[in-house]
Length: 545
Image (tube, rainbow, N blue to C red; front, side, top):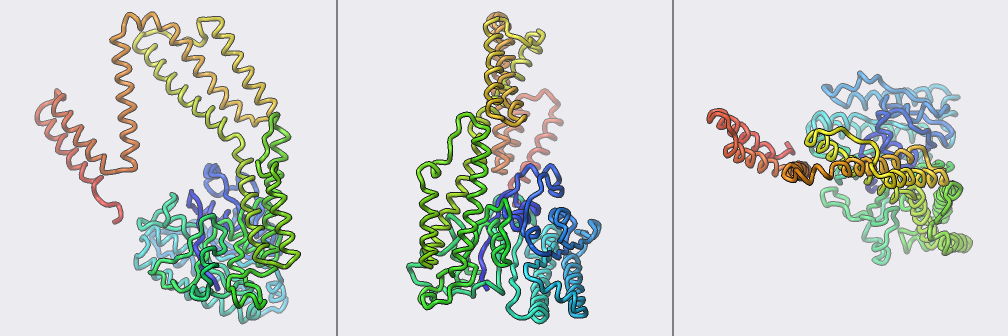
């Protein structure tokens, strides 16, 4: 078999990781508002494309795919069974027991054996025990390491039974994870320990391990990878430095399963087929180049690139329909995409798998860039409008406080000048007309509304307060000083979030300020100062233990 690292994306949580691996797409983080359980939008997946899928595991994961896939048979334990106070291995043991019960039925009933032997069948074992033990006891704990050993033994036994029941070399196996975990037993952020997960594949359709010594130096510098910047050197602690490591994006696991099963790629897949995991060409040239891909792998990669390109073109079509001044992706206008397609087809006709894979991969990356271009088509104007809205709201709050609290005057909703009012209403009309011409979503109207509302309100209230400020400049200066101090303290707290030790300096500085300016009794000041000095020690302590 072959191994590598699957690189996930933030947030490194269970739901987005499983969606990436099984559907080949990176779900919008807004799914968090559904608790990572309910699908905000239904999506296609490898399970949906399969002939049949049998799955066992967590009630938080399986329903995401099973509730919309009628040919998926799933069995999951109750949420109460996930007890962090217990050994997490019991969760994995439950999964393996149900899996072996199905294999027992296959051995006892010929019709069940025939059904399970059907091509395009998926067996999905979701093993939550390691994650539970990692959270409860942290990685490198006795419980965690023992869980790894038990899972390794269970997988070896499951593999032995599968090969015996269904015939040797008829099944492909993929072992991977949805996310990593830090030494503190946490995940979710973009640290390497959380984004890097193992990917091990073996069995039918998977190539054998490649020794680095057997790889030509010319090929070693350009190892096939679905990463823009591949990493092929394994840490010495892994004990596999003599073998080629093949890294992929997490979404590439889905097209890998699709290719091994002979399925159609999921509709919204954005993963690039990692041909480096598939078996190489059996021709004489392969003996001289262990990394030479097969012709079949090149064809599958080209189909994968076309699938991503069709997604991008569909996005382009929808965008063009609702955009008055449409600007297409540059590679569509200059003919780059057409050239890559023609080059790939020509290489396939000549059965030059190396060139075909090269051109097909370049086409896939261009298609991904096009897809990203159309998905973020409105990013710049939207970011500008939202930023103006937030800054306007902050400024409006400050103006309101000054007018209502300092000057003790009521808040005004319209500018004093008729010209200013007309310009304000005119800006609203122009903005909403533009959005209507663009067939913009209703949410966009809200963004533009607030971006224009607050500047108008600020003008209305600053305009009326000008005379008062001229006669009370000292009060205005005091307000501005207070506002600047508040902003500075807020920024210091933000910096402390990234550099915890600065909290200690903040606490010590507050002690000095209390000693110089507080009017409390000496005993109270001493008690408060000692308390803060003790608290200031904690930000300096390590969080790793």
